[in-house]
Amino acid sequence: MILLGSTGSIGTNALEVAQSFHIPIESLCAGKNIALLNTQIQAHRPRNVCIADKNDAPKLIKGDYKLFFGNQGILELIQSSKSNLVLNALVGFIGLEPSLKALECNKKLALANKESLVSGGWLLQKAPITPIDSEHFGLWYLINQRPIKKLYITASGGAFRDAPLESIATATPKQALKHPNWEMGRKITIDSASMANKLFEILEAFWLFGSTNIDAYIEPSSNVHALIEFLDGSITAHISKPHMKLPIAYALDNKQALKQSFIQPTSLCDLQLSFAPIDTQRYPLWCLKDEILSNPKKGIVLNASNEIAVEAFLKGSIDFGRIAPLVFEAIDTFHHLGELKDIESIIELDLRVREFTLRNI
Image (cartoon, rainbow, N blue to C red; front, top):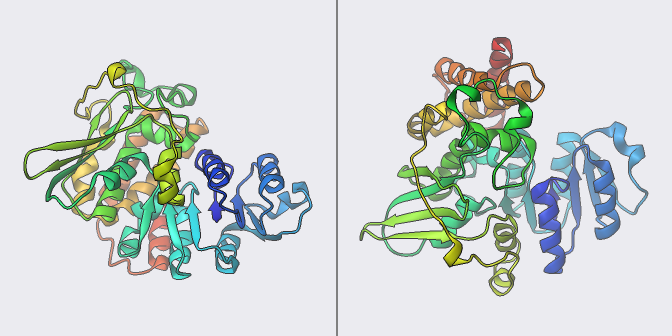
């Protein structure tokens, strides 16, 4: 297996599942957490390793592996690896090119990198992709031959689900990083608090399943991940404990995943389920849902402006309440997106949106 983003939450869980399934790790790619990467190299003995910064090379333990560097190194690592499976758990826009490279090399793509579909879903639309996201895994798990009326995904509501409305705009990064149900990376936790993450997942669902009849509801327990409404009036739900090992297991080997449990079973007697619409006063970004579904290529603008805004918030440069206006300003400015037929045109637009958003901070 080729694992991109091995030291993050998805990556560490994927290595545990791979070890249980006896799947060898040929290639590892990581960012700045060299200490954890060294532990992974010792445990899995990969043939190829890629790190973000060449200056970190002296910190790596010695080993019989080929070393790659930076974004270009990720592409070269994929090209030179013999494994047929790429699990892309990179964070951010940098994950798009590796996804395209994996498919170009005729490898199976297990995709946890949201931005690949949000910013370039039309380039990946016809490719066989296994989603590693609890919501899209839930939809995939439920879909059968019955005619579908509508797809639903759920949201926990994030850190500010129950916070007084007047306190949200000036909330600190420390407050925003307290997710009620999931243990995730810093950026996705902020995206959960702002509901940007659910906009990403709406776009992912569009590119994966080809439907614009998609909606989301707040389900506070995070035990219901997805629902499908059929034309016959019935609704089927996917219910499980909130843990990423379940979708990861099916992405790595669905035959083994059918026979082995990685999560505790849900106690039906303890389930307390409730659903509520997403309040646009609390989550103003949710106002964009219909607009981005009507023109899904606006996902590039959404993602680029949001990445810059979240980075500025985490650095203390802006208040939490400034994230949504920065995204709205970018969406309102970039109307004429063009055809965006290739990765070069996507990268060019992404860069222009980032520069625009930086000027507005």
